Image (cartoon, rainbow, N blue to C red; front, side, top):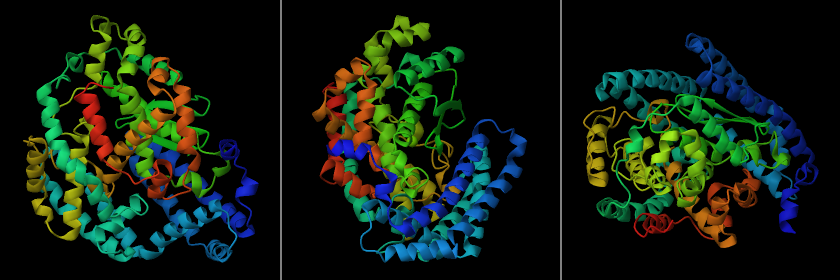
Length: 511
Ligand code: MG
């Protein structure tokens, strides 16, 4: 009964208050600007001719200005104030006010001069980062990173915080996220993962390398395979697309236009396939949002951590499962003939190589969280002033040695590998680990409801999508991420469940 009610959310019953209705009318302008911005951003990374970059940058910054103006509109603010005074708002209406007030706070706290300086600094830092990578020189990037960190600390001061300036930055990416939450969350990973990685690698059931990693593939065939997998997943091509970009991503233009990308390097096909599966997970979340949330903050303001849990769920728990390799072996070897000389078990092992690598984006699910922990600890110390920017490279290498027993020999493979800091995204990384861990919790929960392994073996992916829809997607931005996790799991997030899963899969071969 409750399920039916949830699936049939009606706009007229969830948004009743007259001020809320006016707010949503205003909001549609903001939504439209955001939709246009998303489309331009998508185009920039897929089909735009490279020389168009500077003109596109102007368009995007102008749109940002319009957005800022709208968000500061007096009438809009007035309606929000009036709505807030009402005692009988629905939970949906209250959530809208919560989301909008947070956004207002951001725009009100930062002086225009600061926003301009921030924009200039991060644009320059991004450019310097790409050059620094080519030169393989942290020294080249250093003055820019110093400025970004300086401004990030200022930003935290403008925004205000409790206890620790880094909390203000975390909260920007994940509503309500704090250091004390993360310290507790990372503790089991920090304590248990390094030894577990040693054990898994020395047991060597799962290889560190596989021949298929060097095997070239036909790009046309690979494309066909990706489309085939998406069709099996019931990816709704009437409402969605798959394209190509240098870095795979998902973008939402509207609830009926969600776009994902992958890349084709021509060697080691799992990269292209798992990008598709990962981004599919992101897209499905957006595609399954209640239509009643369309054009409202409840559809636009989703948590990054919850979003990543959806992509990781499909990538790690479905795509890297034994059932997936075995049930899709013959299909895959029809497209990629070279697979015929391998067994389904070999395919499974290729999908699940475990090694201590230098690069986060290439890390397997066993070692991945150590890469994030390292970044979390460095960011926290930088904002705290416990380490200086000039020490970052040294600290990075020390932590790599300590956590993964590998040390980068070049800056490109070390401190310069991620784009995040150059564009000012300090406080973003932890959401990756939150998603990775929560995905496992969701899988455990689903397993109690139905036989998910059989569903994968029978390629009944729809039953899995449906469960995710009813369990996670229907809420959209209704709750803060930690509240939503608590509502779904009936407890707080606990990374020990992730450790148990890794043990089961990689030591007991029970997955
Ligand atoms: Mg992702």
